[in-house]
Length: 411
Image (tube, rainbow, N blue to C red):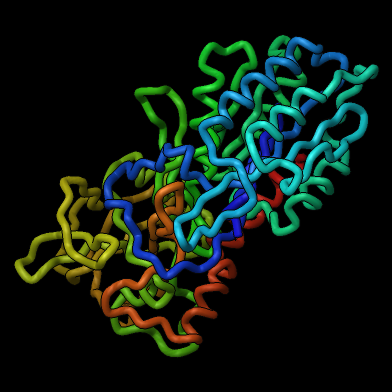
C-alpha cells in the first residue's frame, strides 16, 4: 500500500494518503528543523498529474510539461509493486487532463515505468477550446476514482503557472496552494518559465512524501530563509488528553502522549513556537503540557524520540517564571498570542491541566516514523490502539480536518 497521493495540477494538486501501521523505529533525530528526506529514488508517493489542455496552454507549453515531468520523474522509481514495510518503495503516477471537461488519461496501473509515462504525456494534445474549468466537479470525482482513499486530511498542492500575466489564474493557483494553518502562506507554487522548475518540482514531490498520518498530527512548516520559501519538516504535532478521563486522569502528564504512541512535544526555537501557537491556539484548551521538565539534577530537559532526556538552549518563560510550582511545564495560550511557559506539577490530577502537546517523527522516503513506533516502556493495549485511531476527535484535529476538507473542495 502506498503512503499517499500526490496530485500535481500541472497546474496541480497534492494530497497525502494514510500509512499502514508499521512496527519500525523512528529515525529522525530531534532538532528544531528535522529535515525531510530528498531521496527521490526511495520515495513512496502517488502522483496525479492534472494538466490543462485548453488552447490557452498551447502546444509548446504542453511539450515543456512532458519534458520537465519526464526529467523530474526519472529520479523516482515508478511502478506498482511496492512493499513499504519491507523497504521496497515505488512511486505511482496517474494523469488527468481538463479543458471544459476533465478526463482520466491514465490510471496508476497504466504506468509502470518512465517510458510508459513519457508515452502518455507525449500523446496529450491541445484541445480546440479556450475554456479551462479547473472547478469542474469531475476533476475531484476522477481524483477520487484513481485514488479512492484520498480524504484530503493531509494534503499539499503543487501548482505550475504557465500564464502569470493572467491575474485570475494566478490568484486561483495561489489560493490552491495556500497552507491552511498559517495565514497568508502559499507553498509549492512555481512558474512554468522558471530555470529551476525541474529542481523545484522534484523537491516539492519529496516534500509531499514527508507527511503525518492525520491522527499523528500536523507536519511542522517553517520558513527556509536560505531559499526564501516555506518547507515541511519531519515532525508531526498533535494534542493529547482532554477526552481521556474515561479511564481516570493519568498520574503523569507524559501519558497524555505515550498512551497514544507519541512523545511530549519539544519546542526548540521561536519559529517552531510560533507555528505551534498558530496551529493549536484555536482549540478551547488554554494550557497544554509540553515535554520540558526537570531531570534528577534539577536541569530543564526535553524527551527525545526514545524518551531519553536532552537539553536545549531555547527557553520562553513567562516573565517571573519558573516559580517553583513543579518540575514540568505548560505552554500558556490564554491570550491572542503565546504567553510563554509556566512551571507546573507533573501530575494532572493536582495541576488541573487536562491535555498536552505531543509529537512523532514524520514519514518520508527513508523513514516510517509515523507508523506504530515501539517506544521504551510503552506497551500499547488494543484499547489504546483504538483510542489512538480516534485521535482526530480532539478539538485540534477537528479543526485540522475541517480546514483540509475546505481545501479539497476547491479543486
